[in-house]
Image (tube, rainbow, N blue to C red; front, side, top):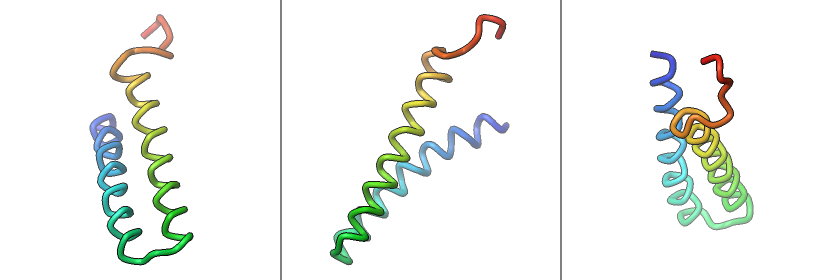
Amino acid sequence: MRVHLINAGKYLSMIMIQFSNIFRHKIKGDATMYIFLGIGLGSTVYAYCWDLYMDWGLLRSKDR
């Protein structure tokens, strides 16, 4: 069950990118751009680490 919630977090972070992009276009400014970039970077790193470990099986020990 815990793994499913962590995987759902990956998709939630991708949805947050879309909402932050809408927010960025509604309120123009440097701060909203940095928020958008931060959420985008965080989501990308989260999804990439998930894919490496869970989907592709890399970075796992042989004991598992």
